[in-house]
Length: 432
Image 1 (cartoon, rainbow, N blue to C red):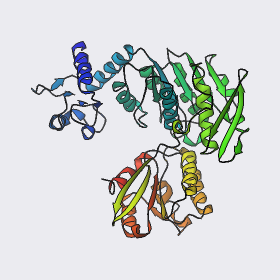
Image 2: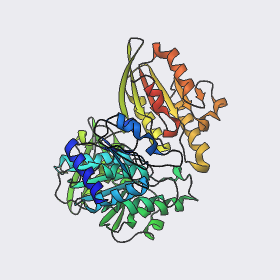
Image 3: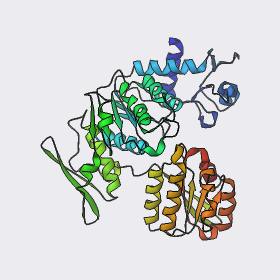
Image 4: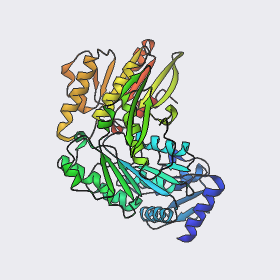
């Protein structure tokens, strides 16, 4: 096994390549590992990996090829490789979870550390389940000072698996909302599972942001973990010209946070500030976050030329919660751009409250008097009879037909919804 580790390390050093699980993501000289899932066996795609010029293929097939290394169980190999990497990593690991904002906080904390001259790595996009965590660990920068990971859970005990693998030093819970109960028995059961992030054997300190009665949480955590309510600090926000500013005192020192983007981003800044101050005392926080260090959204802005006209897609196609969808609709509505259309995908894992939260979104766009709205997914489709002003579809395919007819009057397309709606495929239909 040590010999394979050395080969992988040598190839990564030589080519600065990535380890990938999906042959569609392979670039020349990447390392491909064919992992097995309930639906598929990635090892069966070894030929495609070799054809795409992978420098190494690790699979559970016994084929005689100089680039292919056989292992009995690729999933076990991945676990051992992750452990090997983490055992040899000398930096500190930061883990972030919460009901909303995980990726935004991860990006913000990454940029703050990087802008203060720390060598910093962060996990890939919003890959935050067990397999996504493994992917990010195997591609981490082994010489970085800090590595920042986001962790997401959909089922009980999933956090236990994530923490057992990662064993982080510093942990942040950005907030826990009752809108994502999904597979959990009740709100307290969800809280219990989120708080398992602090079960790391290497935990030095942690922080929980809460906006509800903390008594239940206080009984579940130890002295290494601090509770804060960012809303209490945010109450002091004032607007000066075009900026939102909040001043506060921490340990007899005065701090000022400002943003031209609104109070929501100050909330991100406050929590990030209080978290980072727990383990880095000397860091540039004087004017707090520069605008380029606050990541306002995980969305990508991409464009395509359709019917000889430039059309911009605001891509948030990979995740949505009641809070984030509501917030991004309001932000996009305020943008001074014309000829807009909203494509809103259903939100998953909301449990018994699913109808309530989907109706809230329909009511929001009605109150805002938004014109071109496309709702996608069964959770929205069941309310089709509520309004004939909007378009309701069970999947994304009819939305493509609608857009093709309407592009003469469309310049900007906002797309947001849970990943299972496959709204990314809709965008790829136009952005090649």
